[in-house]
Image (cartoon, rainbow, N blue to C red; front, side, top):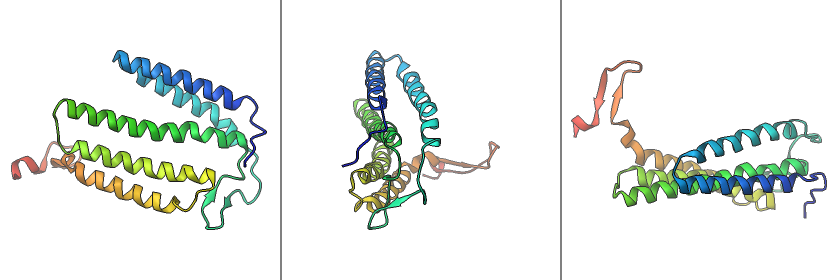
Length: 187
């Protein structure tokens, strides 16, 4: 079991900020004012600024990395303060990706708008979430799924891109209005 003896009050402060931030974002989302995006941006930028010196000044012994028995990178050389910061960005980012995709899909279903964006959104969300989850599991010693997660992530992202090909209705000469190909006219 990993002990985080060098973290001090960091876990409690980070948890309190995350809890208050989540409550504010939920409240603003419920109000429908769009203020949630500003709150989320403040939390991400503020968290990044606060985390930068912790990460940059972290003492890491040589050789600067650690691998498990199967060659997967693990964070055992990182101080506890750095290791405790990563879930604030990785886990919340993964949840935000999935919940945002679910929200977009639910909005499309309510509006009865079933175009290629709905499955593309789901595939792209899976493509971001799966590697986030499998790389996060390496923190707990579960490294067997790391490369599979990376592969599945790339495949789902690529599949989502292909499904969303509707975005390329027009192919134009860059920085001009000249249309080389228009899918709507070709159909």
